[in-house]
Length: 582
Image (cartoon, rainbow, N blue to C red; front, side, top):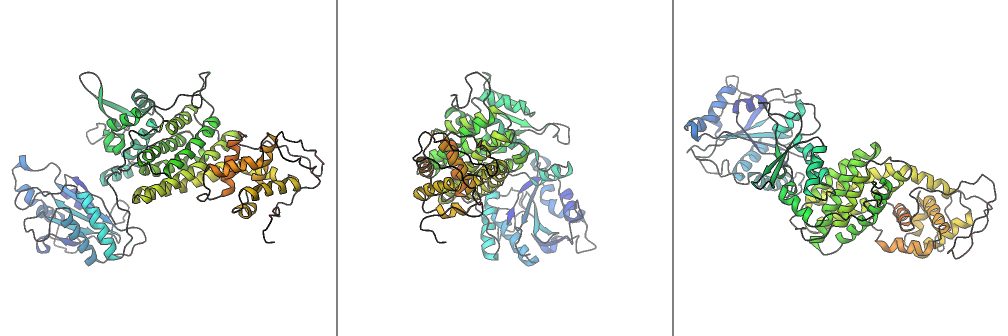
């Protein structure tokens, strides 16, 4: 059950909308389900003699009774309350109880207060009501509605439990401000899929991703095409900033400005400065090429993968400040990927970044923690620019996304262990989008690796299966039956050709971090092996002619020589695992 409080200045205009057909004729049978005093509140929906003008006058009477200088400019309080999808439809009597309880909880009309504000509750759909009040009490005073949104949310959690509805996650007052009903309505009329507030929040986050200084942040905002105004001190230093979306104007034709703090709590200039002052991103060769040229997208994605794994390791520890800092950095990496990804994965990564944005904020302070490495990874991705999404770029992207899924899961566990329900849900949602993006990015390179793995000689495949059983006995049988086993075999063979011992490299990949949270152990091992062995993100094994006998070269550090290929393996028959049932 979701309440959404806003204020306005036109009682009649709001009532006209609530009792009207709606923008798409979605309003059916509009009528009152409750009011401050039923005998004084005419219902234009059920009483043919009642008019909207009469209802407006009754609601506005305490406001109009005051001298003009004491009337609030925005005297209309509006609170839609909607049940969650899948909830049962409440009766009018149940909605009436909901309205009275929320009016009481928010300070609009406390139980037993005969001088409270005038209010009504209108129902014109099965799944929600609209509570409307005027913000002057009968005695001329203003209601005590401090933190009315928080109190409305708390009351809704109680109602959900008592009415048998879905119980939504409780907030901790670190969420970004949601768009108002008026902002959403305006966006719909303009044909926008999101409100200017949401668009600006995303673009400001993206401008901040990997930024090394305040000046760079402001420059990126301007380059993103946003209108920008700084609030300056007499010394010329910026005290704050506001942004506006080009073309977004009010009724007077003026740009609609949003301070950073109104977009999200961590986007105010003081919060941004705390993030920047905690340590600028590293400027080593992993981010900036010594030649002065931007690094390649594939290079920066490969470099970001171990840094992301380190962030996941921090999230499994006990240092909350360090973990909070790593979450901020992970959010910046996702924002960087969303800006530079090819069209095939851009939408899913943008959704992952939007979802994870909620998971980056909690009450744990991260100012003193060091997240330069992860922010440096974001900076490198930004500087490298757009990836092509194929070849080495596609494989490196898949390598990073495989890791980012594990990081998102680690973030969800960290938040869940600390009772951060909304953040944990957001991290889980981000993980789902990352999984979808990974499947798209990995499809081509994994298909190539599987093809080469199928063509390896049977003795070679069996040797790598034996290595897998020796180093990972608890997962060996599962891995050998996964579709990715052929790709893993190709990776082990390529590592052996490069001079690595498959047993040693596998052990390093396994001990780097636990595999229990992986959706596919095989996929995680493939990308870890390729990263640890500095192997190409796409296979380069030669494709021998069918039926040919190919002598295999002895790798420098392999323990035994691979025999000649006398037959090609049957892909449907996995290698034998010692001790496994047939």
